[in-house]
Image (cartoon, rainbow, N blue to C red):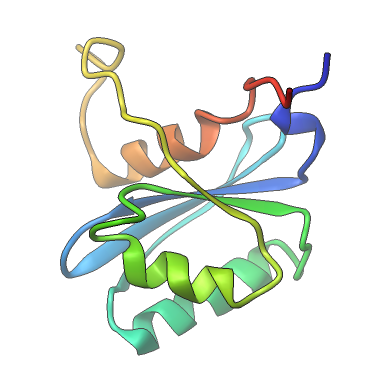
Length: 122
């Protein structure tokens, strides 16, 4: 049985907010590559896409996992959809699972990216 981690080389988790989004790039084994924060403006999103392309060396085997694709992440999701990158909506984060671990936008974006690795493809 195949899992999502076998299909892509990189995963980009995005913790979305009104003024800025926090991005984390990980490998298909969950290793942290980079974390960055960019404004939600069109220019900020363009910078984020360029930044991600540099870290992944333009590898289109990169899955974007975006929180709130119908709310704060909608504009970003629209921009990603115009590229050749695949994009999916992040599942809801389980507050109980992160109890006692801490809360930060960087940690949330990492968790978002990592959340899809073990999902089955069927």
